[in-house]
Figure 1 (tube, rainbow, N blue to C red):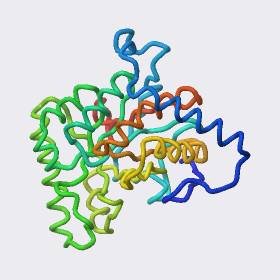
Figure 2 (tube, helix red, strand yellow):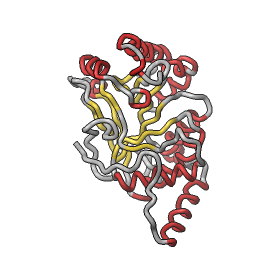
Figure 3 (tube, rainbow, N blue to C red):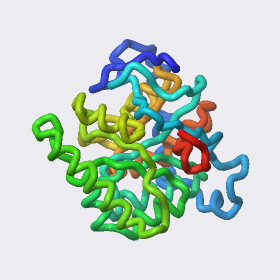
Figure 4 (cartoon, rainbow, N blue to C red):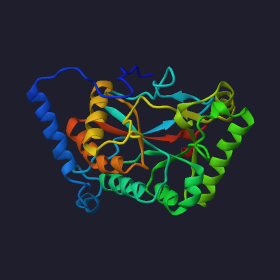
Length: 277
């Protein structure tokens, strides 16, 4: 598995850089954010060279409940230098999630969405759109409890199972819930991890994140996540599609990926391709 170098989880590097480097970086970020959406021409021309695109699809075996993301677990996905997996938590939420989906569609990029069951039940049309746009859907529990460690094993598992049920009902046959889960706040328990292993459900953490649970401008978020990306060079990135600042930041981020030579990898469970775990 890939070994990643981690940045501080709460803030970008504070190392001193020359003033010219700072100014150039700021100009780049401002230019990337200047276009609030990926041009509509990207849709018209399809996934041509002008679009960011998805470089490849990685089929992930979920046998034995593997755990990915070196912020939480020893291993991560076997990504090459410059490859990233985009993941979004807590949705769907009308407004920000629509904007995120529009941006991804215009850029011809696929991601993985870890949905909260009650949000899926409230916005089934958005759940169906996530599936129809070709994204992977995983489980983020029914109610996003903080934390599962404060609940009994039975209560925690019931919240996980209710989340899966709500997502499947919202899909209504329009797509498939992948055997992927992300624990709220990355807070698992040994008993729940063992149960996920027994069920052959892959557990996703992250390799780095945008810290978008903290209020900030889109420009600040873009600067932060690009700094972490340049440091890590690869990995699973965590965003929240419920945050308007992230929706506003995303077009600039995707542009930066393309300009800096990074590639987007889409993860799907191997079972979807008719293979054995």
